Amino acid sequence: MTILAFLLILLWTGSVSFILYITDAHLHYQEIYWAIAIGFSLIITHMVNMAIYFKVRGNKPYLWQKYKRKGSSI
Amino acid sequence: MKTLFVNIRYLIVPIMSIGTIYGLIIGGLYIWTGVFLFGLCIILDTITKNIHLKANFDKNGNSDGIKSLQYAIMYLMLFVFIALQLALAWRIYQYVNTTAFDTSIIYGLTIQNGITTINLIGAVISAGLWAGIGIIYGHELSHNKKQGFLMSRLIMSLSGASHFTYAHVYQHHLHLGNEDDPATAPRGRNIYMHTWLSHAGQCKFSYDLEKSRLEKQEKPFLSLSNKWILGYIYSLPSVILFIWAGGFLGLAALLTLWIIANFELEALNFMGHYGLIRGKGKNVEHRHSWDNDSVFTDWFFIAIGRQADHHVRGETYFWELDDVKGPNYGIGYFSLFLITLIPPLFRKYVKKHLDNWDTNFANDEEKKIAQQF
Image 1 (cartoon, rainbow over the protein chains, first blue to last red):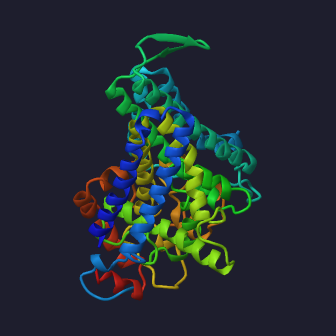
Image 2 (cartoon, chains in turn orange, green):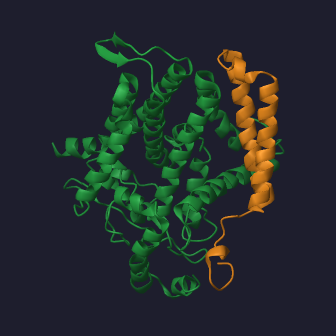
Image 3 (cartoon, rainbow over the protein chains, first blue to last red):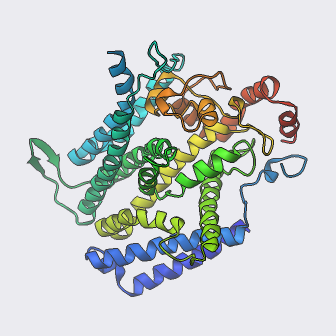
């Protein structure tokens, strides 16, 4: 599930990067309005990435089960 | 005199952070000042590991710490860390725009204009190492809902981790030593895996907290009332600054700075609770945190290493926290941090300490859980 989550994150981030590229964002980033617009899109991209990870990886990916040799949830 | 000493001894980080900014501005080899200072701290921490001091109180039992002074310093540190990012962004701007290598004198300071690739790498590492140290102020202020919470959120947002303020107080402090706490690393987890799992886990807590709060208030999740979203909005000025300064390169630099900073944050969580266990819903006691009160660690990290006392008296100011004879590795955070970077070495090092904890600190329930690992 972790691999799937990171693949989806990669896909989403790649799509946003592609849109930024075809709109010539890489040529205009030092114009302040462009910088603000790019900044907004990237912070939204990051928030969506985190939400994708939460959705795919489930509620508590940090539980201890993986590290236990025996026994159930604590 | 004693009061003065008690209060100025916590100025190591402000002075060294300003030194790092100074190095970034002066340029040339001075760009590496932050890395050099971090290395110096490792040495100082290692050679002073056996010096331990108690908290200072006067004969009436009042603390020698001056709250207004310590809070003023912590508030000011927000602006120091902003200046750190501005200095780094300026250097990235120079690199991207291939500023000519020459010197200029501004207010008597000789500044080396232009920056080489290797020095740019040094600039990012220097800034990242000291931006990460900002955590200690974000942490301390998170425990004062009225006078520190917002400031804590703003300081943490400079590292893209504004969610920490909520998660630390309302998740970590309630669930430590239990698997419901992402910031407590179980036995066997390494620091690298812990960094991601703990970061994502705390972020998820803040996300869920807002989701349920806004549902109760019948407000939409996608709004500025959402403090999870608001936390990222606080980080927006940093993102815009680095994009404007260097485009893709600026973004890569900011991401590196955030990764280093969050790695340091999670390293502190890792070192503070690794392998310790507490039954679900049981009282938090001194044995549920690793104490770290070597003198340099104590002064540098504004007593964040006095975890055992801190977790039992969460609202207590850092200058009043004391040695409560909790479990202790016996070496400072800097030395321990180096060991954690090599997981097999850390597991070997920590085994005797965990065995000691299991034998001399754990209760029957905790021992039973420990046997499962």
